[in-house]
Image (tube, one colour):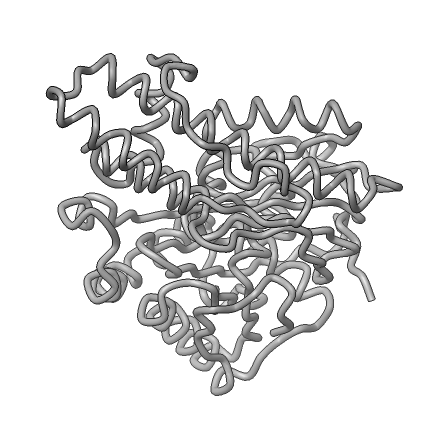
Length: 364
């Protein structure tokens, strides 16, 4: 049984918590309206290691979670007692990081006798496009986006395309078989010594470079129809190219910019080819929209290409209203929890547990 996207008569404040990786986040939502969305990032802490250190992530979550939750409640004008429910990401993600958020949410739910909602992080990214800005007038906040629709998640840990029959019902049409797109961009940035997290920095350098300066192999060329994204081979080819150039001389800024642009161009072209082929193969039918979520979708060039692709196949792309909703954040968890609340999908606090390998089509 599906759940309607539009509900403007039964608003319920939900406290949402996300500690799936290296952002400690808490939000309060009212229906589809985001009342607060606090995100405390650990990126500077992990940058010296070139990636997320799980034990450090857990320690930092434990250190900041109480402060983050209290700030989200204060910013939304809410109290624990006034909440309708508590929600938390249970997966996918880093197991020991997920555990921090789950334990905190469980404690709150038990202490204040609130329903607890377990949320799939991937579903949250897809539904993030439905979040509403609290500063908009209610008359301007009515959504027309209705399932069925397609949805993509492009993040550091996942590259995924699904068909959404209705909220909670997802059919996987394409997914990565190795590196995710975001992970691929981070690794290429590391090869160019651009730091961590690399995707955003790579984008800045790519804007100054020529995407046709270096030739790189296009993954899955001629086999885009099998519904698989793959970036490990591209990364290996790029590593060899960079090493060859370094053997000749120190990379100049121009070379770095051109390399960044060339890599990003090939990575995005592969994503668009596979996505378009999968959607076309499945058939648009009565599907009008492509919901786009995930941190990589904050990349301007990628959104431009997604819009172009959607125009060619006659569907409309839908993006979150704010860049803060692209990366990991608790507001999107609250949006997903809103639908679960309406469907009465609650979990007992003692039963909720971390699910680091949770799939988009797995029922929780």
